Amino acid sequence: MGAMATFGRMPDGTDVHEVTIADGELTATVISYGSTVRDVRFAGVDHPLVLGFETLDDYINHSGHFGALVGRSANRIARGLLAIDGRSYQLSLNENGKHHLHGGFAGFSRRKWRVLDSDASSVALAIIGADEEEGYPGNVEVICRYRIEAPSTLRMELRASTDQATVVNLAHHSYFNLDDSSDILDHELQILAEAYTPTDEDNIPTGEFITAAGSDYDFRTPRPIRLMRNDRRVTYDINFAVDRARAAEPRLQARLRSPRSGVTLAVSSTEPGIQFYDGSHVERDAPASGLHGRRYGPSAGCCLEPQLFPDATHHTNFPSTILRPGETYRQVSLFAFSRTPPRPSLVLANQPR
Image (cartoon, rainbow, N blue to C red; front, side):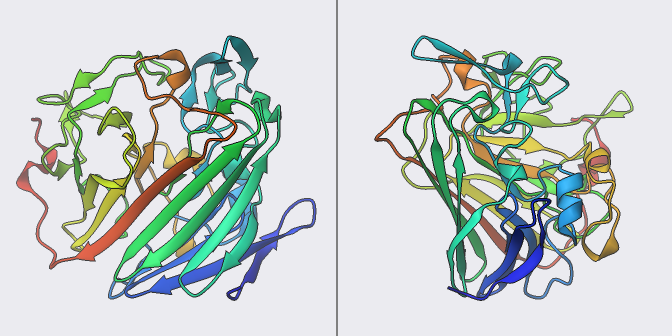
């Protein structure tokens, strides 16, 4: 097993470990609380590429799911109601007392994982979600392996199994900032999706697929995240449908680029959807100081979260999130970094389209 350090201590007295992995131009630091990627560094770039905290207490007290693995079911489930094979289950209502979000009050992102093994370039962590935990049926075991692949890719492979029919929908929740500016609104984003799944006022999907072309959600061609309408900025927390089914191997989903630093992030995954969240509420979720003592404000980072579609239990036209005994849930997502000479932001950054 590779070298580990103690990052902090849980309220029950158990240690949370930290492992640093590297290969080629990329280095990542992973902690066993939440299976969290705490820091990512790219050769020649003098700032972190993700948002994170310096202490375990800050992760525990100021959740925000920074860099964590969220589940047992990522994203939202309307009214916390789950139906499997004619049986109904009531999940915990941890979002405004109305809906279920990211696995509940004590989801995978807010628990200590067990470090299985590590070496210079990889670390594997595991967790067990117990039957009836947060209202979910079945005992579920999840294994998450992070590996750095030269020259500059963070590979995440997830596997899960269950002893009872349940739902599993896992997602990585890093907040990316590729130039260390105060916000990511002038980062250029491309999402290779023809449609998105619209939501109601509670961010619950309606079950529709709407064509992105010509809308505020059209990122098929790279453009700045910042978009103004009637003197107000358009905000984003939405699932894009890259496909309608999972793939055997990762396919390109999105690219994020900072014209200021020249750093590009390419996200590929086996999952059919990718949730784009522009970090509008980061300040609310991160009142503590972040890496290097920095205070994170609104949109200090953005999330690109490969996953199955949210609230799939209520929409038969969405890919199923049900996992059964004898089946294996598998996700592979790649976060590949590269760098080209910086160039000025696009003139269109503040213009309505």
